[in-house]
Length: 416
Image 1 (cartoon, one colour):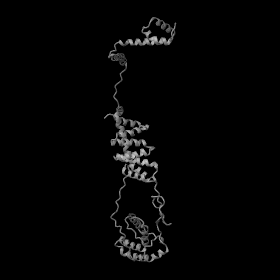
Image 2 (cartoon, one colour):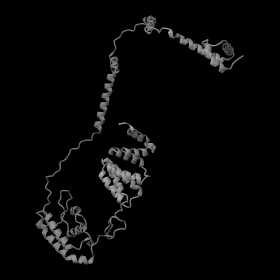
Image 3 (cartoon, rainbow, N blue to C red):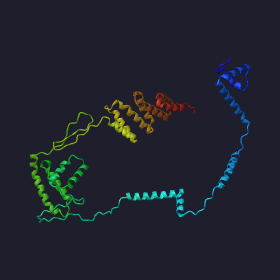
Image 4 (spheres, rainbow, N blue to C red):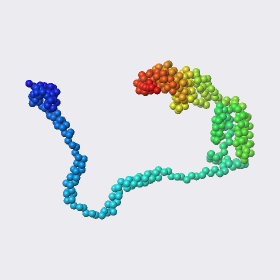
């Protein structure tokens, strides 16, 4: 009668230790004769028992490794003695140099010296050549020589130089300069006057002159008298007076013939807060002022916030909130950054007010999780654990902030 493998496997361990009854022993013995797998399993169990029986043997002595090495040396010693001894020769100079160069320290020093020499050569090649400096001749007398009144031959004008005196303007130039600089502020007017006096006189059309020729002629004569050198005043006074008289006599005729161009301001555009545009005559072009975008206050506030200027940022954000043209989507952004600025400056009570506005009135704000975290931090600084806990409980609903909120809640729950 044979049994199956599962029943035999359950009896193999007892069979190997000879702790089985006679009936089961006969069944297992009959099954092992027909099943090779069960016979192999029984052999493995018996090998394990044999290995386990070796645990009582003493370990090998510690000197066994040394004894084995000594035996190996004794066996190899006759072979070493049989080899011929090489002849002792004195190394040559080249061999000594090669041996010295092969040393690590000498090789490293040689490589370092070569690298330093290469860097020095490259650095010298990149250095610019030093040019000799020439001193500026500041002590040269550049005062123009007085011209003779009896000379009939016209003199050639010298080349312009930064050290030359400004050329004398004509009455027409003086009137044109006064008319062009009338609408300017004082600093710009002085710069414009210097620029006009520094350029050579150019004949301008009669239309460019102003009707107030008397004032221009009188003012020009006075300015020329002040700017004229002492040695040339006597020579040039007569032509200046004659030109002023001619200008005074011709002023009414020019005023009747062609009026001067007028520059004025047009009516302001309907947009509230926009700068009025300049309207000029066909001969005078004026730039058109650009209308500022409605989010200028919010943009300037963000720029000030990024620079770390919290006071300026708060002022710009408040101005954006007061502007009716501010989009509704930018209102929570302004309140959020005002709260951040207040918290950054240590005014958590003011920051909490703006945080609450964002949380209560703008529930769909994109940065609501950040607002909850920052508001909870302000409540922690103010010493309000209950309000901080309420904010952290809502912050837990955001997966990205859950770990941080749980850590802070554990700190609140910890005994103190």
